[in-house]
Amino acid sequence: MDEIFSPILIELPPTSNLNDVLAERVGAGADKPLMEVPGGEGEPWRVVTAGQFDAQVVAVAKGLVARGIEPGERVGIMCRTRYEWAVLDFAVWAAGAVPVPIYETSSAEQVEWIASDAEVKLVFAETAGNAATVAEVREACPLLSDVLVIDDGALDAVAAEGTDVPDAEITRRRAIADLDDLATIIYTSGTTGRPKGAELTHRNFASLSVNAVEAVPEVFAKEGGRTLLFIPMSHVFARYIHVLAIAGGVVTGHWGDTTTLVNGLGEFKPTFILAVPRVFEKVYNTAEQTAAAGGKAKIFHWATATGIAWSRALDTPSGPSLGLKLQHKVASALVYSKLRAKLGGQAEFAVSGGGPLGERLGHFYRGLGLKVLEGYGLTESTAPTSVNRPTATKIGSVGLQLPGCGVKIAADSEILLKGHHIFRAYHKNEAATAEAFTDDGWFRTGDLGVLDDDGFLTITGRKKEIIVTAGGKNVAPSMLEDRIRAHALVSQCVVVGDNKPYIGALVTLDAEGLPGWLKMHGKPALSVDEARKDPDVLAALDAAVQRANKAVSTAESIRKYTVLAGDLTIENGYLTPKQSVKRAVFLKDFDGDVERLYLDKNKDSLHLIG
Image 1 (cartoon, rainbow, N blue to C red):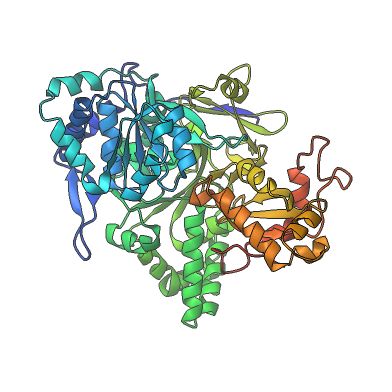
Image 2: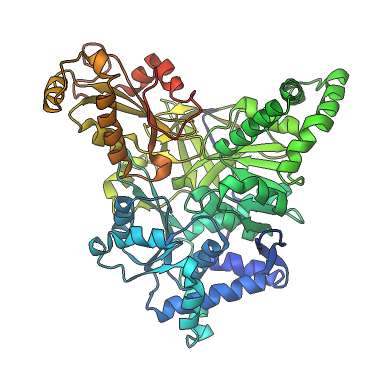
């Protein structure tokens, strides 16, 4: 099979938009819980009903109108995942405007590009520090009229400004957009290093959401469904789930501090957990380390092996043997029950996206008692195009296409997508938009994959060079590589980190530039091999890496690098005639050097490995 299209189940009225998704939830029960907000330490979470949320959305929308925000204008949101993010998103839509997310970890250079390219008129920044970052680039963003700080009560202040705006004005503005109008611009890394603004429509979010609820009711329309959002809402994955939860009747909580995530999960008790693979990896690693510290490593590893074997046996015609079932029951009592408790104790499903989870972890979590629903998508596909279902799962695959979504495998194995979830264009970038689509309208993902006879999609590789970390962050390596390569000591730089917990780099020294640098710094002559271990050379490279990191967010920054003994040349097969690195060849030959970047425990410092 090389092409499949899943029929749409629910057709929305063409004049509807995302405001109607919220209106339907309110209409289904204004007094029913919609979200919960964490209280103080030891205090219960505060319930926010659908009616209360809608009232706050309207109040903030009125304030935006009073501040002069017109329909179609852009409002930036630079904030961690929290309740206020959700309010602002729907308030901007209620005002007829377009929210533009900005990662709270973004550098001033990134903020300048997004705010200027999207023509942002107003920014809500979470902290004074975020506001200061925006302030650095105000002069380069002439349309940006103001920056408001959420921590300083920006939402209440804006709402107070709009008390004289009539309800009828918000009612009018909520009805302006139709399904094909712009809902948001989400910036994603491009091969040139400049983030591209993916224009996502109201159809993309609203139609995909209501159809996903219909297709996976066990998760998204289940009575008492709860989920805790902790991945960044600036990311399309969390943003989509935040809309999906409203469409599906799910109660949502928000938790912006991942260092205390276990506390949040224990308090909120979600019925399904949404995360990128790195979170699931951390849960496993922490559990393993805790067991080892308590002298129970042997029991933990036995339980892990038992759970994986039990899960794999589920996919065989005969299923788990009686002996394996008994071992699994014992392992559940000794180990699994404690791990489930750390996840809140009520989680039935684990929804993974943003990168490959891996077969082993998939089986581990199913053995633990969580049904793993791994999916696949991109910013340009409004997050998911496919996902495994509770009743149709193949671990290792990314599942079946959601209703209204189509996939095609090209002759070169590239995954092509089409459907109501595909973005309409890259903002103000006709060339990139044209390049992204085939002549017959299929979106080129740059990923490689296969479809089995049942329609399950499996990802086999990546055609494009964009790095996707284990945390789901898209990183364009060229931006960092170009900046580091500009240093006099550096010949080549290859940034790595695909499916890894952080970004690393492999650097080669410039044999021709080295003697001059050494002389300029009053140092004796050194060979390349001697220089790559020299403290002063390494200090200079540290500074070069740190300077390059200033151009990107924390999640995109290089944590470790190593200096290779030789260089990359046309002659040894690692460079093209245009002096471009043959990345696939390089990564294959230097796989051991890449892996060593991720072995050391001290991952927050730059240092030479090997």
